[in-house]
Image (cartoon, rainbow, N blue to C red):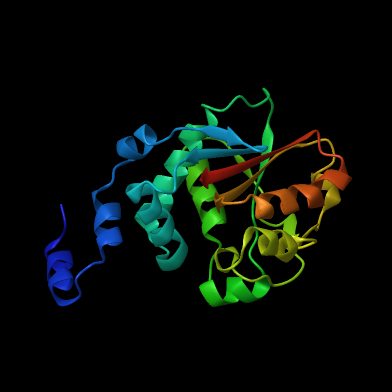
Length: 203
């Protein structure tokens, strides 16, 4: 139930349609939307075209919405139990932002989603080992071919000893062509992980 302050604030500054969707969404509803799929070596937990999922991801990414981040954390924690992953302890790495974008945005929404998931179940999250080597253009502005070129050699591994022999899950919020996740995997493989699983919240 919205507080009186929230109701008054909404009268003065009407919330966007996506914010209204996020406010009305529950953890149970998010779990129902979890429909894992696998395509071209990448898992995705749900469909980005779904209005609720799109609203959650936009609110988390662009507005640092705590409720959206928590719900996406629930989606991730729930989704892991529905994927055919090896019976192993995984080290989970969010796709990193470039230092410039991190300063501009102030947070990495994927890392915050994973930390929210870790509050629901025991997960090993490492937001420091995989790093961006350079600033890249937003993928949404580019064609498929341009996306592949844009992400080439865009990642590096800061602490290789964390990767060697480990089962890795590398996570992004949305995957379209998969260029970002594949570039991250390419940076990880030379450091001899036991496995690398690419996973997006939505596709």
